[in-house]
Image (cartoon, rainbow, N blue to C red; front, side, top):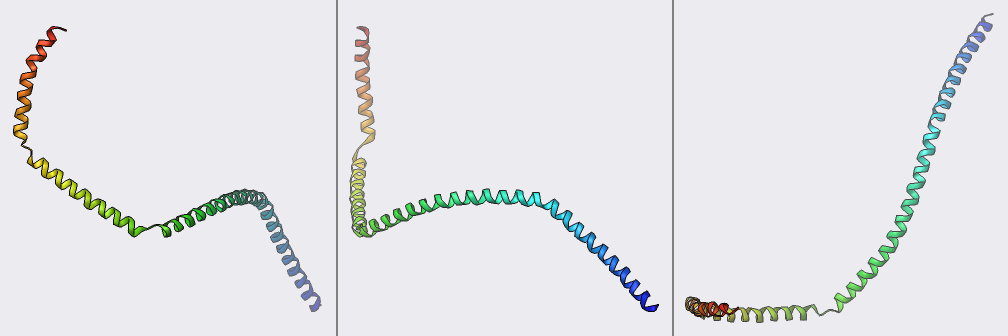
Length: 138
């Protein structure tokens, strides 16, 4: 009898645990059913992103080839360029220009602007009556 009572108690616990396990499975099933549409949406979005990423990668691949080719060309041209000679030419040009500017400044300093302004005023005084005279005939 005691053995039967133990078996009955074990059977009750087994029934309770089976019901709990069934409820847990039902909960997991409901959660999975509610998540599946969202998972499909995310999967579709991931597919779109991967397609776009592939297109961008293809574009970048072509552009990178062009950039590397141009960089190689520029590097070769710089290596072939006579940079020291160009710097020397620029230095000579600056030196020559500096001398010309100094000469021009010296010549401008020689000019007597006050006398020049007086001469221009005198010329204007002479030309003004002539201009009035010729305007009479117009």
